[in-house]
Image (cartoon, rainbow, N blue to C red):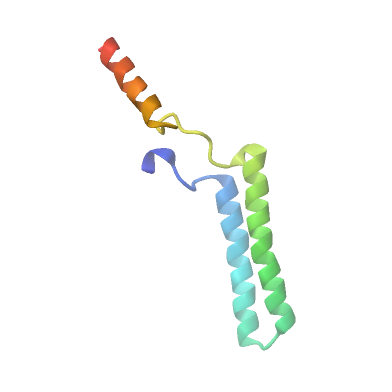
Length: 86
């Protein structure tokens, strides 16, 4: 998976940071007995997922890698083509 750079995109980082802030808010709300603040934290966590997905759909997410084949047949064809040129 290192070749595919899994998760190293602006969409992934933004979604995780927003969700992390939400977890922090919800965690503080657990210490301070505030039900409203717990729900706000949970809403921020969900917003992180929505923002991350929206950014991914807008083109800032994981792009298709040339190192990953869609099927075994495609991988076999690539190996045969490389063997012919070598």
